[in-house]
Length: 194
Image (cartoon, rainbow, N blue to C red; front, side, top):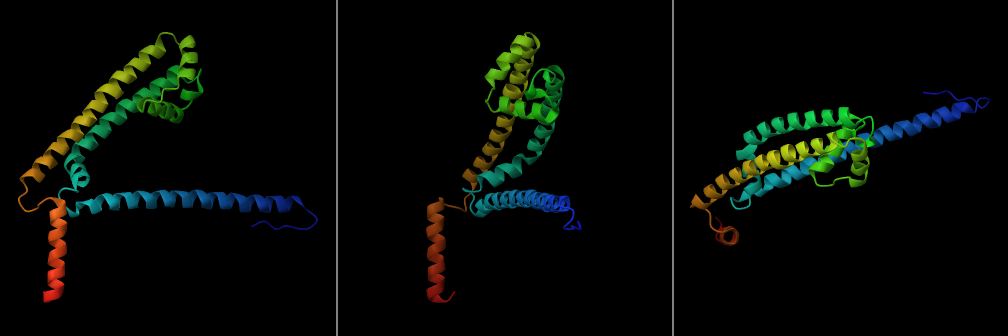
């Protein structure tokens, strides 16, 4: 803690600065806690859909495709990381979009989601007339077409397995009929003392 004397007004500024910095640190920590709670809430909400086979598509797809998803994430991470390093080394000295590895990863994420920053890419094209089109073509073909197609096929394969298991299930009816059946059984049990 700072000791402040009335003769030294700079001590008040240092005390105020330490208080402000501790408030910002606490605010960042609380923000991360809020994000963690929101993610836990979303995970719990997805888990709650498991109450009925027809609404449990997402949890079942995650459970069935988990192994394939993890292997895909490894492969995707390797290729994405290599392309980020390549972009930083090729274009980092001439563009703020690829200046650091984090900025390169963010720019590649923009490219992946279809948000191509055309103004900056046009400026870079003047400097890197051969290497930028080669990099963008490689990124587009490898990450966007090949890896996203693999991800879609993993997702669709897991969905087909879940759908087939739901179609073969003889215990459940359609969800509205199951809800009516549960409600009727609960009311009948309450009136008859079951």
